[in-house]
Amino acid sequence: MDDKVIVDLLGQVGNLFTSSLELKETIDFMLKAAADLVECDAATVFLLDDDGGGLSAIATFPFSDSLGQVAHFTLGEGIVGWAAQRRKIVSVADATRDRRFKTLDMAYAPRSCLVMPLESPQRLVGALTLARREVQPFTSIEQALMQIIASQAAISIDNARLHAAQQRQLAEIASQKREVEVANAQIAEISRLKSEFLANMSHELRTPLNAILGFSEILKDNLVELTPEQRQECLENIHTSGKHLLELVNDVLDLSKIEAGRMELSYDSFGVLSGVKEVHNVIRSLSERRDIDLSIDVTPEDLEVRADKSKFKQVLYNLLSNAIKFTAQGGRVWVSARHDGDELIVEVGDTGVGIPKEHHTRIFDEFYQLDNATTRQVEGTGLGLSLTRRLVELHGGRIRLESEPGKGSIFTFQLPIAGLEAVNGHRHNRVLLIEDNASNRELAKMVLTGNGFEVDIALDGDEGLHKARAKPYDLVLMDIELPGMDGLTVTRMLRSDPKTSSMPIVALTANAMKGSEQEALAAGCSGYISKPIEVANFVERISNYLEAAV
Image 1 (cartoon, rainbow, N blue to C red):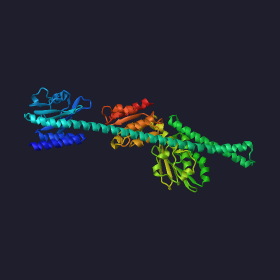
Image 2: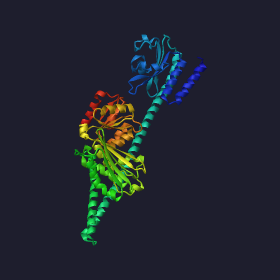
Image 3: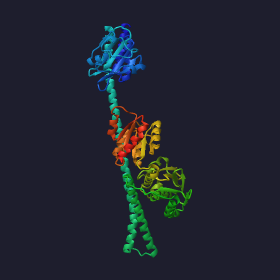
Image 4: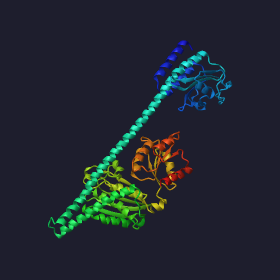
């Protein structure tokens, strides 16, 4: 190679090294330039490990597929480690005869080799090695050319690594900023819902109180001359308003009991038809006043279920009263019940205003109400459907909604006919699995459900956060590498929420790098299970976490 070509090539190398902050681009170009300037069979770059204790091959030319077969050196080990530790250029005529030589697979063993420490003004960053399979020592000119490349490359590699570290820090700061923004948005939403709830509750309490105080004052002070019929009407209004007030207070107390885990179910076997008829008798006057056709269909008529009858009736009452409220005069409301295998399926439908699809999930949240002209005309605190869902899930069941604006709504809930206690044998088996990978999700669900656990699924962090806040779970299995909001962020947010702060969370992740477990525990996880899961002891570990949480 003539001098002009060498000068041009060195100039290109210098320009790239001063302009590139991409580590791979810098290293690949350095290896190619080294092979072009100096005849060799292999050129390899080793970078100093983060802990500064060893050198790992990061790239080799031209045998890139053989990178995994290149040795790793601790500082001082082998010719490469010796040269890097002492910051000295080492040229060896025959490496196999050098006492510092670290034995390799002889198919890849070099004979003549040249080792250049890569050292920036601040630190040692690695080493560059050139090797020949034949004994052909590197000349002083070749060494000088490689020293020029190594000196510039060391500075460029150091800058690239510092740039990469800076980018990671910026990404981490951006991630933390997003976490703060999400948390602030949720705090603002909670504050808004709280304000709406207080406003709604104030209105709901004042309405029956106004009737109670007004009519009772008329009766007490004889402010108006009343006929016996008017007097009876006043008493009925006071009684009705008092019952409505009691229902409001009971709804709030029931929700607080469920959230605190103090709601106890009183299981009993009863006829579904009798339960539906009892609710029908209570609510019939409301449907008749609005000229609404209210029908019942229970098949077979002697169908029985094991559940808490008063709570079963409360669920039906909430759904039916809502259906009647939001159905125009002359409309239709129906209740149908049947069994499917070991489940009772109850459907409450109407021909009312309907609910837009984007509200189908949130309609079950506490205090949430649709903001439209129809709902503003109807009294309510936004607690009924939330309490309904909680009571259904407390029985081991589930509820869903089908609805379109203008086409009515159908609420369907399903309960175990034999009761939760008889089906599951214990209460502490409700698991929320937050996992985006379909195969991993199906495997974990198959193993858990096959061993008697009740498993709900969330596909990403947002859905997992919503479900964990909406329903009491005995355990959350949290994948860490989730799309969007990652698992550690979800964990921190659940830990900061009083409603979910005591819910056990176990990290389930393929990231088994050193420090990952400590990071998960620091975020608030109760335990750590790495993938691939060992099916034989997976259930045992989950059971142990559940027992520890009881």
